[in-house]
Figure 1 (cartoon, rainbow, N blue to C red):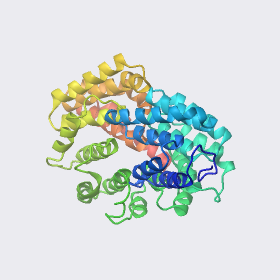
Figure 2 (cartoon, helix red, strand yellow; figure 1 turned 120 degrees about the horizontal axis):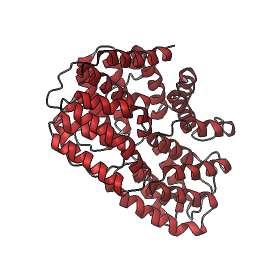
Figure 3 (cartoon, rainbow, N blue to C red; figure 1 turned 90 degrees about the vertical axis):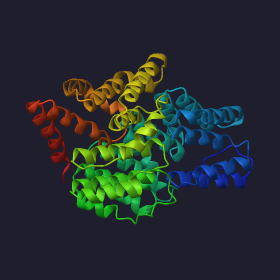
Figure 4 (tube, rainbow, N blue to C red; figure 1 turned 60 degrees about the horizontal axis):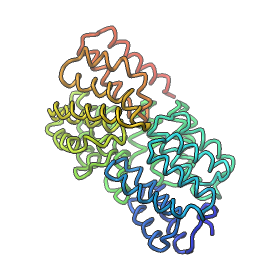
Length: 428
């Protein structure tokens, strides 16, 4: 039997494979129904190896320590079925195992092997792209999608999703014209592909095209209701365009309506909310008591450390909520994690996360000299935190403000010029 990409799958039921195909499409388009649809495929065919593996992948992408046991259970089920599965499926199971063992580079090697033999494997391509994004493997964001591109055309399902990956990878490398071309083509083919829409928004952000960005993201506030939490990140981008255009009141209203989800502890929602409020405050906006809800969420997530970039946002939230002891305890927990684990994440926490976290805590407590010293010493390593250039720009903005508050006027001017020069180069 074959899936929607024409790839052989070890399954016993045509209906299960059909539902599985729908789950893949929903996941690629950020639909909130993807996990429920995939669960239905497994209910139809409990011995569907790739469905169990895919479910494990989805659990991993929650980036939550609380969800990892569910991912491990999916791996156990997939591994039990792998002996009778194809080599491609066995490599997927191995990739899931590597992810759970904290070795994303080994998982990426599995997906490289899969796509070399099966360039239409959209699941391998997408998981590779996702993992490279959060692991700081910037060069590979476009390298693998571009490598398989000659084997694709618009007759292959999810061609637009592949173009969106190429677009985002090119944007992160500063190849803005090419990135926008691929991104617009991808969005034209599939307007529901938020990753492609997001890639074009990134180009406009880096080129400081705020008016174009507001127009590009001109959606009604209820447009993304059936999409998963990534929708909040699309609104985050629109909010950045509003900030850059000086529409600060409109930006704060957008935060209240669609950027901040009061019920969500999802890592991306936390990142969006914390970084957006911080940017507004750096622009002189009084955000009132909005930090308290974020500080409470951060206080309840002090020991997970699934994603270092989220740890840093938790520290900012705790500090802005005046929970300095909790922020210090969070950093101590990061240090303990780094000392007792051998994962990729632990290594990044030790090298980058802890010193940047200490810098942020010192900054929030008014020790600007210490904050600036730590930031300047370790900022060269911040790409290892993963995320995008636009997201990590928050750390650049903090560094600039640290220099200002530390009365390091020459360094402050240099940091401002450094950031402005990079943006001047990006402009069309």
